[in-house]
Amino acid sequence: MASLDPVLDKDGVQLTVDEAIATVTLTNPAKRNVQSPALWRALAEAGRALPGSVRVVVLRAEGKSFSAGLDRQMFTPEGIEGEPTFIDIARSGDAELDATIAAYQEAFTWWRRNDVVSIAAVQGHAIGAGFQLALACDLRVVADDVQFAMRETSLGLVPDLTGTHPLVSLVGYARALEICATGRYVQSAEAVSTGLANIAVPRDQLDDTARDLASALLAAPRDAVIETKALLRGAQERTYEEQRAAERAAQARRLRDLAGVGD
Image (cartoon, rainbow, N blue to C red; front, side):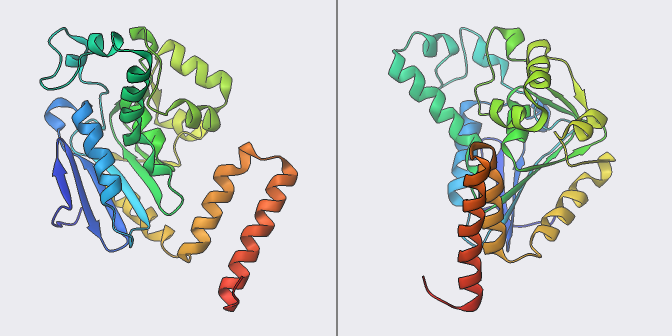
């Protein structure tokens, strides 16, 4: 990756910007990029810090693993210094508990914004929260050593970091249930064949492949990509007739913009 001055560099998250392409890097390879509330706050801050010029965001990670999931210290009575433990969270009132989880989810939501296309470049382990972070992105390029797994159910929990919706959308209900309930590994060949990943490449080609995909996405006019992403993201929630109408409205906006005709 090119050496650029970081826009943000804190709590295991670094954001750099190279004109229309932003790169978010997980930077704690010694701990396999485990996740914590501080990392989630930094990821959310990265989303807020994106300049308006950015059209594509590449999410990557240093080291052998993309992310091994939650920092297990969160499960201990001592927890992580300065953060509530899971026991503390469980003992809070309904509204506070809901707000705490909602705040954690913010790290996983902005990748779906219509004004950017997000690409996760995933190698090695992407477990639990790591799997869900990869699922938060629009596209996934994976190394041939990738191992996705959703381990929350084995811990007596559920995937709650926005991963269930994209997982079902990509692989269907039955396979999503099986993946989550068993906690098994999904490797590169299955990831590509089921739609979890767009392409699998050798590990040493991962960053270059993600960068090439980012460059290809910049070839089309920005507003056309924004409208197309919005159409495709909303297609499952619309009826056929509603989607037809949405297509007509989007195309009308594009035609008028290209012709220089106001509304």
